[in-house]
Length: 239
Image (cartoon, rainbow, N blue to C red; front, side, top):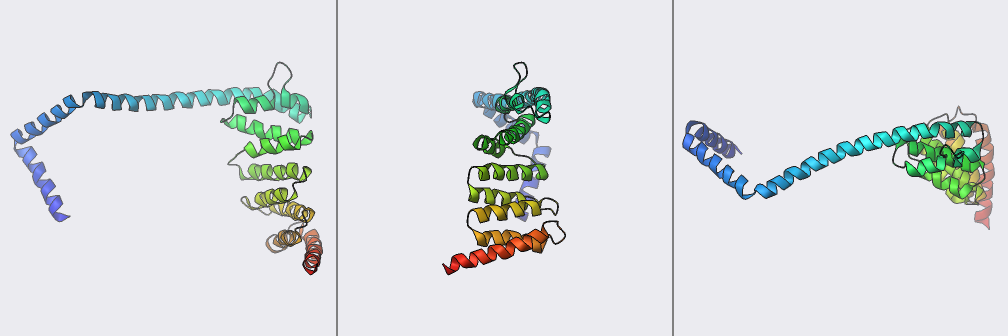
């Protein structure tokens, strides 16, 4: 390592002190540029295209997101007024949540439209479509994301997909677990596992509430449900 450092230092001193050596190096560099002019030009053009393309794409996405936000205003108004058909499909002049989510997918507003659409479809009893829209939703807001997981569980449970629903409720409970909502999701997970006749897993969900969320409002019911689930689990094993 020390030899390489000394060698580089000597080369640098030679370049500084001997103009002929420097001129020779520059000549070699010029020859290299001349011989590879086309390749170098292509590289520079490619780099410029990437930079410009990235800038244009960012501006396009920003514009798309702004458009989606404006389009969502009326749709969310209908959603909050419980006019779910208009919220989902529009009113003939304004786009509905479904079209906004599809046309502006990849934008923050389009992503949020998927969440609203999923909730509206769930209320309308279109459970398969609701699950699909809610599964498309992806957020950095851990409370909203956990809520989306739980609502997906609701949609699956309504379709008789008890195990998938239970797993989704458990996922909601474990997503940045907190004492405010996790006990609720765990309780729903336990009930869904019981509906799937998986009483051992149900008992685990109730036990987690009792152990990890001792101050939650769900503890009292969790104790009763756990005892029942353990009894039923024992009965299954005996059979």
